[in-house]
Length: 65
Image (cartoon, rainbow, N blue to C red):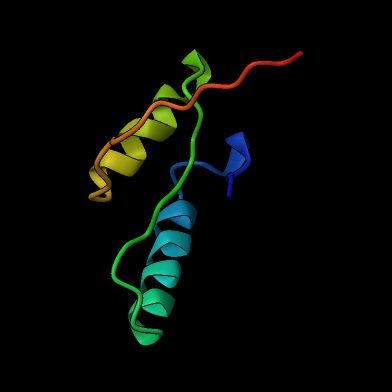
C-alpha cells in the first residue's frame, strides 16, 4: 500500500492500516507482516509503521543473475 505524497498526513494510511488490523482480527489472524524495502526514500514510511506498532524484524536479500 502507498499513499500518494500529496495526500500524506491526512490520516489515510492510518485508516488503511486500521482496516487491515480489523479485518485480521475478524479472521483470527494474529500477525501482520509487511515488506517496505530498505531504500533511503522509505525511511518516512518506516517511521510511520513503527509509530503504528510494527517492529522491524528482517532484511531481505536478492541476487539478480
